View 1 (cartoon, rainbow, N blue to C red):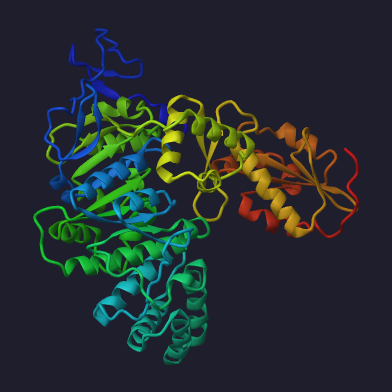
View 2: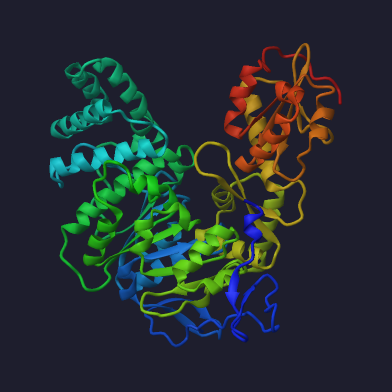
Length: 584
């Protein structure tokens, strides 16, 4: 994969018209520059302001274009959320309402500025409530079909196979639960009740209940209560904060997101047709909700093409925010009339994105965009143009200095927790972070814990060890304390040593910067077992490849993400005794 990202793109030289590669920026034959003149964006008509063009002039997009929907692509930290916020903010000034599925808890400031409401479980948020089986506003059979397709496709998308008997039992149980207007526990009881009608129904019921448990008994279960706060969605400005569930369980966040999108669709199609934009539906982390598996299940309430087509007719624009175009359903991309592409380093993703922009020669431009820079192609424009998303600078240098100091003092905090500790609004925090990124002082880091969404961190460039290492060390110490382990944090050698009566267990944190077989063998000279905790799945693959070459290392070392540490400790009985901690 790393090699594929470095492949040059073949382009036609604007001078000699011969084929050449663009890795140097000049034609190999005549030496002409291969830099392509982008449209300035200043000559287009617009009524929703997005940012500044190449010439420094204000530019944007037409509200009527957004009825054809919009996809925003790019890597983490380059401005996708900022552009989405600007778009929603400017559209709201024209009287356009919105519904935002906020996976990271980043849109609370938009709601406060535009008179919206935030549904979630954070401070000053209205609790999110959905009557899961008591939907008096919907036809029972239609709602049962939607709920069945949503549940079954979420389970399949996450690797839970469903036999035909399970599908039939689930459909019958959901229809009965909707008829009785029961709750999530009632559905599980109905699964057992209805199983008597099936051969070997008891085994089928137990298998089905084990699959439904994450959707009905997990963190998300607090949502499914009386007192529905979700209705209505149309005609209101609503931010649905899903960060409290996405950080714990991706499957529960997927289920809740798709359920809300289905409820929104049914509400929207009962409104009158509209030739103008009247509502925006924003889907953050769209690859989790609109993936090929999620949209292309065997049982679908409605296809993504029909979904988007009907929303357009009702004056609803769908804003899709994602990291990779290849992780989205092709039907969704075909129905998108507007594109905004931020920087994408991955070769295949950049190639795909430039193809959607309609100009493959922009490949090098996509891979070199700076923070806040985007290539935008409205449906009413023939060619894409480049703009800088316009966000005001930080209000004071004092807040900026305080942010940098806070990052150095607490490098292990996720961005949401840091913003809460500093007592800053989302908009102020975003402006300060953007300033730090633009000045090259800060950089973003993501850590995959193995549970829920990856954690976003900030670190000061050049700090060693980095934020990922501090975050994992902080969480590992918390786990060891909860398990009652005796341990020591070392400055040299393995990062942490857990002491047992007869031997020691060393824990090494790997973020991908210093992976070597020799280091592991040195640590095992005075430790009986080793647990290697990695920050990313790619890091796990690199460590696993080293372990595969050495059977001795493989028998004594375990590699895992943070979520698997507790299980690894218990497997090797690291906490069975509590001997005094020897001096270092």
